[in-house]
Length: 239
Ligand SMILES: Nc1ncnc2c1ncn2[C@@H]1O[C@H](COP(=O)(O)OP(=O)(O)OP(=O)(O)O)[C@@H](O)[C@H]1O
Ligand SMILES: [Mg+2]
Image (cartoon, rainbow, N blue to C red; front, top):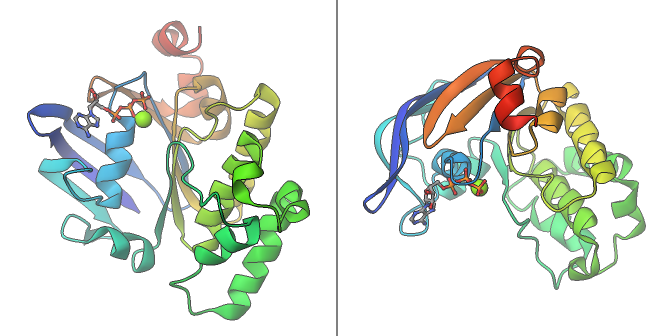
């Protein structure tokens, strides 16, 4: 579904990715692991085509999605036409809007009212907390509830492929597990997922395959269950 080949990315003179290659197949949940500054967010931003100066510049390489070249595609079309959604680091929900309003905003580009209605039901059944708080202003939600809303919004945008940037950040261990269980349910219901995580325990427990990024290079890759047993991974990322 997604094929990234030999991707070199820079911010001005800073080279953030040194020729990474990886794939995500339709129906998979794939994890991208790595320490601070490894290039995880840069990888997601490159796929989403966020433009400079805020975004990274692809210097070399290819990003293909369903056999189409994503590099010439503008950011808004990546979501609306290609069906890729991002749950960014730090959530970025609209604090002065309610839960319902945030979810509704995510559907703006959709033209399938019946499916939208059933997607609302699905989000509220996956996250009963959001259902209870649907009329509450989003900036008064707890951190964990805001993360649920950010995931709900990506789902409401009707995309088939969701990229998540450290969804477990700042959450209690219990809530982290809950979020990953929901992600797994979304994945089993047909959404393909690429999740960036520093919490390797969680990511390897729930994903099918994983890649480890170190200083802009992929240094380890494989089935998540095998990586969880890999001595190098255990030493560096599983404590
Ligand atoms: N806008 C920018 N301008 C210049 N350099 C940047 C910019 N954004 C990121 N970088 C640099 O690119 C490298 C990769 O950053 P990136 O944000 O992709 O890392 P990350 O793996 O997501 O880290 P973290 O786990 O801390 O979020 C870092 O060295 C960072 O300083
Ligand atoms: Mg990051």
